[in-house]
Image (cartoon, rainbow, N blue to C red; front, side, top):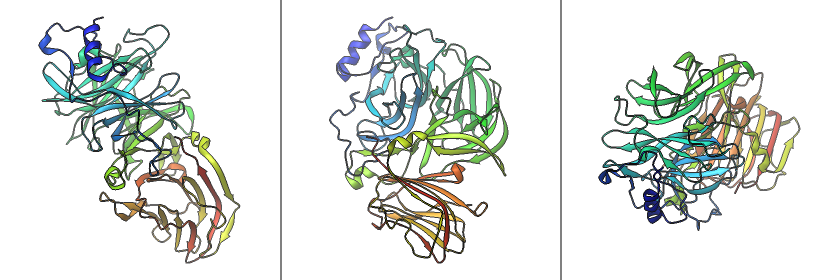
Length: 510
């Protein structure tokens, strides 16, 4: 393998301690076409950055510095979880797309590493690193395994002109260094539908004994292409899924219905978390229901971890939009990830639906738990009257609104209000200018068997809301300057019967 020249170039560019290798599988003897990095971007990921800012989210992932967006390459390598992410190493706005990199033993406590993939040029074409996926090559399909350590293989979109294409890199040391396959050239050429085809999702399909790539390739009408391979290099188109709702960052998961391993369904969803449920035969997807919508608010471009050690499908999304917190609050970063959630399929009276629920590992962050016995609260009585000041909280409540007009959940930073007549929840959100604004959180919250079940995760800048055990889910930002400073849960205009109230004070994951 030819490596010395490329490795020397990388060392000059990013420094001797960089976690980036620029080895090429197929040496290119034409000097004019050689691989080189562009953009004067260092791979070193802020060793002197301070994570202890008072407004930094404490149990949501943020980059130590600068901008992030889509989660990428989420995979468990047999020892730890990897989270790569769209990243601008040079500022707190979108640009210079690079793959940032972090690892965790539990999807909560993350260690950020040097950037994995930087913008480059090859064959005279410059580009940046857009979204993609990573897999563990358990079968050594690529033929690059060293010893007993399984190869990690990443697929990403090389965003170049005139047309994007899909490229590949691999690591034989669990993500410490990476080799760009064929100097970062296309492993899947542009398919000819859109110059910006992007965001490959790759997974192993056991039943057909092959690798599958799901790729968004066109809009208006939406087209999603399935490709297959046995060696991760040679890809063949197998089918197209034509869907108006489909747009970028596709994901595919296989889930048992109601936990029944004999009834596995395939779920296909896009960046907006529109989804369909059906079957996949190794070549194409056959829909049985949908499209449906599972999430919303500031939630976008979510992906699930490949090779989860316990078989769960755990998802993290980018919380896009909201204010520029770097400018408004003098923070070193901008944007955050959502809290990791497990996806399940459950039968409801409307059919099989996707449920989204915080991972059980959140219990490891519990500092103190307050429980209320079932009781009826009169108008204006504070359910939290004897609980000390709260900051980071996980609140679960099951209540019958009875004859009340509202139920108000008031925390120092954010207030959520259940409107009985509208069967809807609102909250004090924040617009892009950073100003507090009343926003609709969830609708269609009619009591079921006399009960409304809600859950809130409240961090320094965000509130995530789950209804009826995760059948509905929304993620939103709020303004740290927009709260009332009060702490209460109140029935307004009547009494409320509370079946369950659990308030868990959380500690920082940092």
